[in-house]
Image 1 (tube, rainbow, N blue to C red):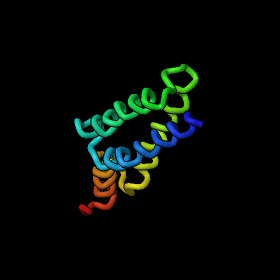
Image 2: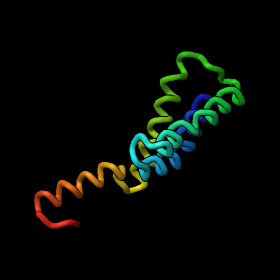
Image 3: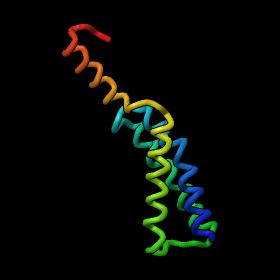
Length: 99
C-alpha cells in the first residue's frame, strides 16, 4: 500500500515540473532544473515512508517520475521552444513568408 501511495505522490509531484520543463529551451539550465529539482522530494518520500531503497521499487518510481514529467509536458500544450522555432523556420522556408 505504501509503495502505491509513494508512486502516486512521485507522479503528482512531477506534473508541475514537466509543465515547466516543456516551456523551457531544451538542455538549458532551467530545463535541467525542471528535471532534477523533484529528486530530493522523491528521496525524502522514500525515507519518510520507510520504503527505503529496495531494488524492486526503482522501476515503479522511475516510471512514475517520467510519466509525471510527460503528463505535465502534455498539459502545457506547448512544444519545446526549440522545436517550435525550428518548425516555424521550416514553414517559412516552404511558404516564403514568416509566420
